[in-house]
Length: 221
Ligand code: 5RP
Image (cartoon, rainbow, N blue to C red; front, side, top):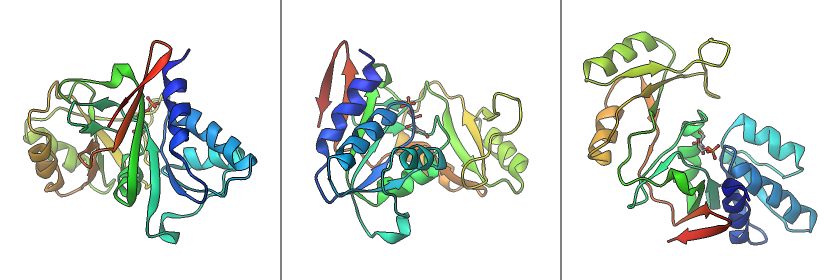
C-alpha cells in the first residue's frame, strides 16, 4: 500500500466532532482530505482552514466546509505534510510552495500532526532544497543578497519554465544547502534579510509525526 495513503488516512483518526482543522497541502494530505470528506458525510460537524488555494479547491470538491483563518482564533488540529523531518521534529516544508500559509496555520494550531512517507525522515535537515519565499518587488536583489550570504538560491520555476508565484503573489528561491547545522540560527538569519517573507524551516514542532512504512504506520510523539 502507498505509504502516503497510509499516513494520510491514519491521521484522520485524530479528528473529533466539532473541530476546526488546519488542512495542509500536498499529496499525503490529499488522503486525509478524502477521509475528512467521509467524516463530514457521516455527520461530523467540521470546519477546515485551507493552507493553499489548491487544498481549498480539493476540499470544496469534497464538500468539506471551509472558513478563513480570520474567522477563528484557534485551530484545534492541523494535519500537514513535510519534506524533511529530523529526530527533534524540526522540519522543512514548502516543496509545494504553500509554506507561508502553512506556517500561519501551524502557528494558530493547538495540535499539529505531520503525515509523510518514511523517506522524509532524516538525521539532519538540508538535503531537500530549503524554500525561501521572497516578495516579488526587487526579488532579484533579494536573490543576490541570499547569494552574498554564501547561499545558492535557485528561483523556482513552473514546468513550463515560467516563474512560480505563491498564493500570496511572492516568488520562491530554493536554497541548495546539503546540511543545516543549526536550524534555529539559520532561520533567524534568513528572517533578518529584507525581502524575505518566510522560509520553509518549521521549528514549531508537531505533536505527532505519522509515517507510512511497508504496509503499516509508525507514530512518533
Ligand atoms: C507544501 C508542503 C507539503 O506539505 C510538502 O511538500 C509535502 O508534500 P507531499 O505530501 O506531497 O510529499 O510543504 O508546501
